[in-house]
Image 1: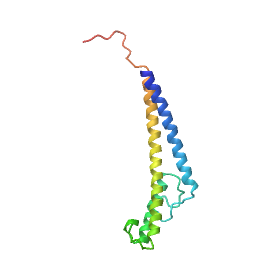
Image 2: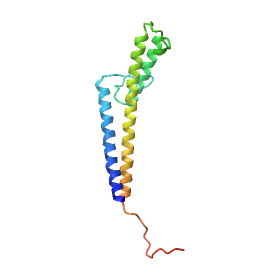
Image 3: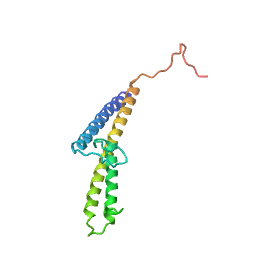
Length: 142
């Protein structure tokens, strides 16, 4: 049973590590392909290419800042149906949601990677022989 548990933990751990790395790379490349650059007036990472979780977050925040400036501080749902800025607010909400979704995807990828490493280490630890000490005389109950 111990051998099965260790092999299972190692295999699942390696699969999760690979899945985490692949997910991180795919999401990063997909964002990078969009050629998005964090706006120069962003509070963080201004001018950086959007290709990772921090730049995606910074761009989403600056989009919100710009939208609030255009709409007078109102969100899409707060604007009147006939407000000419409603379409801009809707586009902004979609862009922000997409960027925040990529931030979540990066987080899940990182979590999968870390859990995979931990499972692999646990599997290797289970395989290692138990260290019962180096006593030269048999242990007897006290």
